[in-house]
Amino acid sequence: MTFIPLPRMSEFLSNDFMLPMVINAQVLSYGAGIPINEVQAILNDEINITPEISQKLGAFFGVSCNLFSDIQSDLFKRENVSDLQYAYL
Image 1 (cartoon, helix red, strand yellow):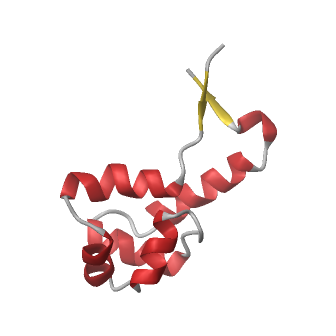
Image 2 (cartoon, one colour; image 1 turned 30 degrees about the horizontal axis):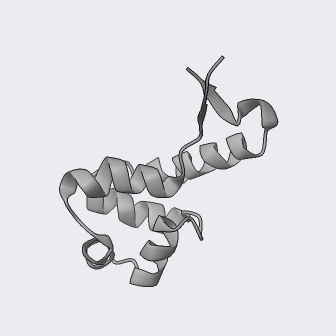
């Protein structure tokens, strides 16, 4: 059986949103109205997505305002339940 490690929020934000749009942390910070130190902390997995940050990211990327907080919540639940730490391949 092969296991796939859970992604980090930084991977999701970077790989699925920032890289395809060719934007960096400074552009995201300015465009979404999130302080650069918070954007960098998210990209370094040092802080979690708050509902306020999720709203700002959702508005900036044109997706649901709950998308990022829902993913953060799901990842948190999976990290804290040993049977769900890995997705099956």
